[in-house]
Image (cartoon, rainbow over all chains, first blue to last red):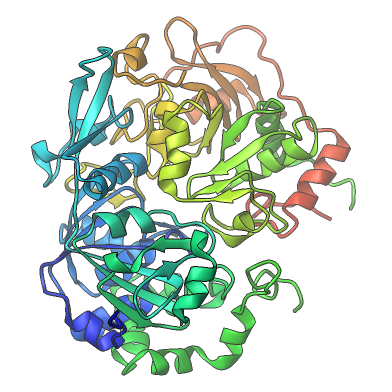
Length: 308
Length: 262
């Protein structure tokens, strides 16, 4: 088999402006943020997103003005409050939105993943998620009576993004991907998307995957590119590798309270760094060692206020 | 530990924990409900199973998680999966109760967490439903935790994100929502239920020191049960207070701005 490993720059350069994308990430974990920073450096723009909970990817891209519309279920920096860049661009009318519940949106991906035009579901009915429509219009939700039982259900149409970008624990060069811990929507977006780009903490030999296949979430034949990105989720964390970076998140959340602050943040950490090595140098070795995971717990006790 | 006064947060945590029955399966969010669930497991309901929407099944964490996708929930769980796994359990009827927070809540227990102002030109864009609509539509019953302020208890929501009883009796059945809907609302002023007949919010008890006037001033709609003797919410006993403070010793979720600790 042929290696799918490419550089971060090459993987990002394969994107087209105006693409429809989805990202992994849930709260303060698993965001493919090295990839997102490189997208911002390369000026990828006019994106349509279908996004479940990937608050960090979305907020960074909103801050960079890279998005035109988003179908979403929830963006929040849990424990740190609202995503200010996302909120601001929506309040300013710069980005169109279409709201779903988590399960409503997950079912749209699931339909895309399993190759059916729609899925029946029992959520969202009776609320403004159904009553108030944005850019999806009629292509959002339809009340339906089950032909077998007569029950009231709602149909949601399939969604298939052009590209899914996921950050995972490890992969072999052929794109067999393993993820430790929760997977949130990682698997379903990869299965629904037309193209899959995976960034990983480690690239391992194929035998490592084959020895432990129950941890594999996406087999290699479904993956287009593999990129080696250690600390690629920073400032979000990766279970068993490193914790979220509390200090950096505090800094980001404070900075993004204003447009000026966001611009300064992006200038310092994204536009002002040539690549991810420079970005990590800016974060500093001391900090990266502090968030390094304790192998027993899978996260950093130091980051949790112990061992200080 | 001193004999510092019991805080409102602690009264709320205690009340919420007592609403969990032993052996139930509960879908939990962050914040005060997480402390309440841990308290229930540490006291009267050790066999409660905690599920988190991110894909954590039967968590037993050793550090306080700062979010539902946070790693202390993963380490020690019996299974990890994805959103589809945990939310499918709801639709499959396997979750007994869920807890929800609010930005705005109305008399029928409907919740807004999407926008303040018009949807297409919002004054404030909020995080959105997330799993809240799913939990409220599908969990066996729902407990709402809210901060009592007039603007947060409006006569009409800016946007109905998450269904309570929608527009009254029969609505949930009409829309095919399988769960029974909100059972209680716990605010920083009192505990509220929902009237059997009208499905509107009803005062059940007020926290110590809270007057009916204070509740009326902070509610944008008429509350039922505002006449006659209103009971006072039960205060947690000293050993429970001690346990609550130990559970959230870093004050991640409760007792953030006030005293109550030694």
